[in-house]
Length: 50
Image (cartoon, rainbow, N blue to C red; front, top):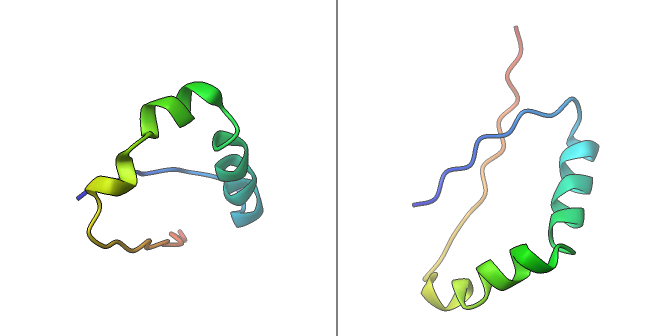
């Protein structure tokens, strides 16, 4: 299981950050072959309100 915690002001900013991160060559290189190790997955997004 991989858990990643992120705080962003809006979901739009989160989506933009994820899109931009996929354009980074170093990240692409480090993630190469990653999907070969994944059997299945899901993404859960929670909104915390105070």
